[in-house]
Every structure is written in structure tokens, then in C-alpha cells.
Image (cartoon, rainbow, N blue to C red):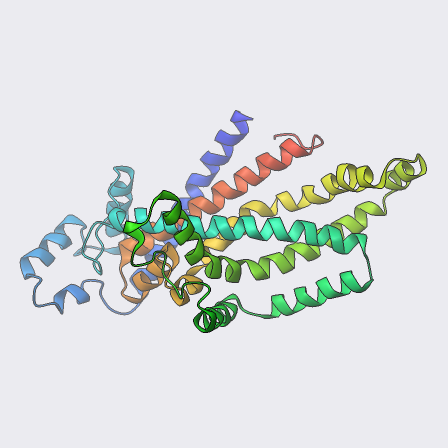
Length: 321
């Protein structure tokens, strides 16, 4: 297994380099200069701007700037944020953790709800329960997550049941340990649910289709003819084989949540990486964009690697290549 993991990690290096190069070129081709914000600020001296130009070789060509950035990355230097005027790492480290919390909560909620719903719908095929679940899935798939977030925020404003945004309450520092956890969970509820609804609908339909296909296989019919309990047939034989193909979606789902959370983070005022990256793109904060893209790409590749390993663990027919 370790040989396979090392091989996949080595393959990921040129992929990350390709992502970084394309991002750098696109950012360079956009109109304007990322030092313009600093030049327009009367509190920033011309000497400081000149120092930045020399440090990151901003007065040289595109490829010289890229290789300077790449060399600094290998030395643990992520660059300088021209918009926030601090080191990029100091900004990202907190925002990445916040995005991870939101994505993990949405990911767990999606799978915890979609799998049972899919199984339930398959076991009640074409009856009222199944039709109700499928109707709800079609509605959820047609509703953008940001629109659902606005509906939930409106509901919260009318009921006062949940906070209207942010990650913490004003009195967060005065709360005890469990009070702080509960406060974060309350703030997490709306963005996590809004981010999960579409995934729940899609995964539920996939799970339902897989279960129906497996339940029609000959070995399931054989197990029933031998008199095995229905619960054992469904949850031990059918469910395991039906869920195996979906494990490959784990990496795509989790990394996709990170990229899809940007609008939700903005609408719900969640201080995450997605909203930070949109701000960086608008202000042409090139090193902040580069760091965000590299982290997103790395999480996508690692997520897919973990999904492949998990699939091989649960399905003995699959072997590491």
C-alpha cells in the first residue's frame, strides 16, 4: 500500500505545479497591477513598494516572478498579501481551519442523511415514500445553495432560533468550553445545511439506484431463497456492495465542498477560505490567490487518494496497482 501511496503523491507534484503555473499566468493576464492598491494608499511609502518589487522580482518577467514564488514556497515562504498587508500564511491558517469545519460538517451531514434516504427509497420503490423522497430531491437539486441560505437566514431573522451569520457570538469569549462549542454549532447550522441539501439529493438518488441494482442480482435472490433474514440480506450483503461505488465520490465531494462554499461563506458571513479567495481575486492579490489554489488542489488530490484507499479496503476485489 505504501508503494502505491508514494507513487500517487509523486504523480501529484507535477499536477500541483501545473495548477500553480496556470493560475499565475491567468492572474498576470488580468488587467491592472497588484501593486495598484498599495500605490493608491498615501500611508504606504514608495520605498516599501520598491522593496517588495525587489524581494519578489516584480519588476522582471512573468516566469522570473513565478520561479521566485515557487522557490519561496519550497522554503516555507508563502508570499505577501498586497490587500491585507501581512504574510499570506498568517491569513490562510485561520481561514483554512474555518473552511475545513464548514466543509466537514456539510460532508458528514450529507452522507449521514443521503445513504439512509437512498436505502429507504429503494426498499419502498414506487410507493408514496419513494415518490415523496424523489420529489424532494428534484426540488433540492433545482434550488441553488446560496438561495436556500438566504431563505434560512430570513427564517432565522423571523424566529430568532439561529444566529444570522458569522462564526461566533459577541459574548463568545465569556462562555465556557461547552458553551463555545454550542455557539459555533449554532452558527454552523445554516451554512452547513444550505451547503448539504444539493449533495443529499444527488447522493440519495445514486444510492437508491445502486441498491435497486444490487437487490436485483442473482446472489440476492439466492440468499432470499435460502431463507436468510431480510435485514441481513439488505444491510449486510446489498448495502455493502451498493455503497462501494460511492466511496470513490468521497474525495470529489469533500474537495468540491471547499470550492463550492465560497458563496455560502459570503452570504452567511462565515470567515472561511472561499470568501477570502474571492476577495483576493477581486483585488488581484496574486500570492493569496496562488496559496488558496494550491491548498484547494492539494486537498482535492489527497481526498481522491484517501477515497481510493478506502475503496480498496472495503472491496477485496480491488488491489493496489
